[in-house]
Image (tube, rainbow, N blue to C red; front, top):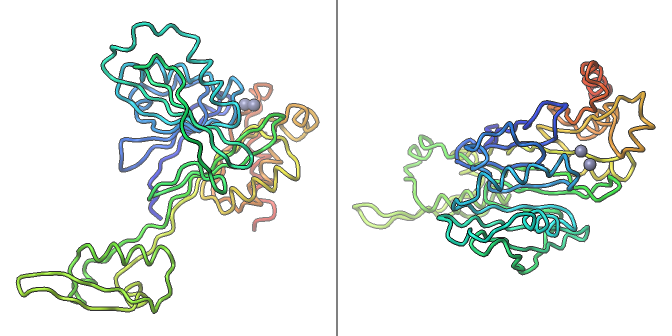
Length: 338
Ligand SMILES: [Zn+2]
Ligand SMILES: [Zn+2]
């Protein structure tokens, strides 16, 4: 596996939740939740293209101001996503400031905001610095199966969870990479060229092995064309590498319904970031607060068959007992997995 993302929690486990997902090969990052962002330097904030907000409790959204402050006056386009009511929240935050001089700022900060409902209808609005951040409606769209963002290399999917308010959990799924073995191509007497695009597409889409693939190219001797079965080329010149999957789950009460939704979203995650707010000895309190205990988080990680689990969002009441939270999660995660 060759993951294209480097995920890191923004703060320590007792700090505000947030996950910064850096791209390895691009100057770009995704951000999951915007709580206290003081730990992120401007350089890192300016890389953020998309911000996914689980819900707008203050510890998940107070950092919007810092992001705005750093990006203001720059030519930055940013997309924000959240649950129902999110556009109003963003609008209200922007309305808290006076914008009489911003039309002339050199760069136009453009904030595209999307909110989804449980039927996966997405409503959008744009707020532009040069228009004093007045709300401009965007045409609505659909987020089928919770897919909020779909790009050639990856997709971001969401699930609705209950936290006494709708709260979104997210997964980032890299799509299958296809590597071409140039030596093997040369052995077949085939050059690289645009025809490889078609071959890769057929391979990624799982077309049948007997699908014909036409290799055509031109050289000084003229035009050439040969046809192969997809299966042969797959075996000889391609290597399909499954993409990594990382998930971010926070602020959720333990219930059968939530556990099932999380299990679906996070199945076979390579990297699961999950809240562990309370110890199981305080499970009643956790339920009243609509949060998970470490044991519940561990059992969810086990159901997901997660390969690596990173806990966060620890309650300050355990400041002296951090290891107990981690141990409880670990025990539940590993208990039946061997
Ligand atoms: Zn919350
Ligand atoms: Zn929270």
